[in-house]
Amino acid sequence: MKTLHQLAGRALGLCLALLLAVPALAAEPLSADQRREDLNFLYQKVLTEAHPNAFTNTPEAEFLRAKAEIEARLETETDTEFLLDLMRLTALAGDSHTSIAIGGAADFRAYPFSLIRRGMGYGERWYLSAAAPGDKALLCQEVTELAGRPVREVIDAFGTLFSSDNPVHLRRSFRQACNVADIYEYLGLVEPGKPLTITLEGGKTLRLEPMGLEEMNQLEAVRISDLIKKTPETAAANVNYFSKPLSEDVYYIQYNVCREDENLSMADFAAQVAKDLEEGSYWRVLLDLRYNGGGSDGVIWPLFEVLRKEMDDEDGCELVGLIGENTFSSALINAVEIQEMGGKLAGEPTGGSVCHFGAINVFSLPNSKVRGQVSSKYIDLNTLLDAAAGRGVETLEPDEPLSQTLEDTLNGVDTVVQYLLTRKTYVTSLPIDGAPLTRGRFIGQLYKAAGSPEVEMGKALPFADSLGIEWYLPALAWAKENGIAGGGKDGSFFAARPLTWREAAVFLSRTADVLEIPDPSPAKDRHGPVPAALAEGWEQETVARAWNLGLLPADADFTQGLTRVQGENLATALGMLV
Image 1 (tube, rainbow, N blue to C red):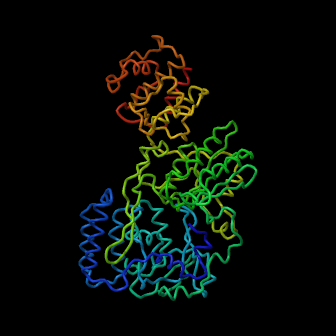
Image 2 (cartoon, rainbow, N blue to C red):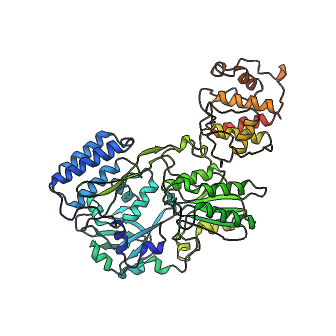
């Protein structure tokens, strides 16, 4: 990720040049047979064989229909049109990690403008961020339509070319390619060779003619970066990671790529952070992932260990992760792990999806040399982390939604950071309606109901599959120590697995034993049999005790899973007996 200054560049052509940075199409026009070979390679070797399941979101029959349409025009289309055809076929996978690189075609043309977005949801607005010199007065004005269509409708149309598994990622892809003339023509939004009409707020319009790459690079454009008064100290830096205090209360860490720095290992960096935190009196730590597009999710773990210790200290700090549309892939995983630690997230929804295809491999087509990347496995965080439970292939929403404003951009203010610098109350968790209750979370709820007793945390983790950073880690240690929960044959606890009612009853009953809650007197007995859904199976007597203690709701559907709210209610009922 680059700053707004870097993205704008001295010439507007840089926007298109970035898209064309990867060599792709061959210098000589391809024959129909060469195109057919490339098309078959993409479909068979990449999408069908290399991808875990490219037909998850779109039936294979639709892929075959699109492939047949492409084959029917191999003799007549241009190399640029063929490249866009390949993108369209790949986009059917609906996988943000599987894509064709748009680049290398010498005849790509673009319109002299670029856009930036501000706001989220219904408050989302698009503004003219760069233009030809004669249109300088129009910078920062809102763009309402492109080619006579609302911007959101155009973004949807771009979705047929840019493979995305959530709308935030698609919106980002649109922003990066919003001025490519060949795309507008390919999608039928603009007639070939005709100007693009841009409608601004108030009804004023621009009619822009397409330009070639060379002409674009020679154009001295005007841009929003010329109007920015200063750069905020939290702007994206050209380093893998750095940290600094922002005030006496707030410490800031910027993590820009999930990769070790050649000159500063993550272990050494984490040690520097630990020293700073020990010497200061910070009550909030900001971990900025807004500019991080991924890499290897495990690189950050030495830093997580430092932050975990800091959060657990007597005057522990609040950890707030900053996320945005550029938070992707491994950085997205790290953001969910921040929530697994009990930290909160602030900013905008992520471009990466919680569960997603990933672990990419790159490829090159045999004749055109078009490059791309393809996912090699499905990453189901829903089954790995309590914080991801109930979430699927969807963007990660922040606990505290905050969006950069255009006014702050021009004044050199980081809207998100400035808000968190002045806010003196803790960020609260975003409720996830209907999220399943996991085994780990329920143990954490029971631990709290039991008064959060002190527990000796040894060097060894409670269970073989414990991560060591979970917010409920002391609860797991307490539960194991007191015989409330035990591991499986291999010592694993499967904390992220959804809890069953039988498991809930067993954990409740065992916790009641630890808290020395007596059996109910006959007057308080339910005077009814254990529900059929709970009557058979393991630990029958233990389940029956939880029922007779009145810890299980009589009107519950015991054949279904539990929600987080139900878990809180069960733990509260237990706490009332203590």
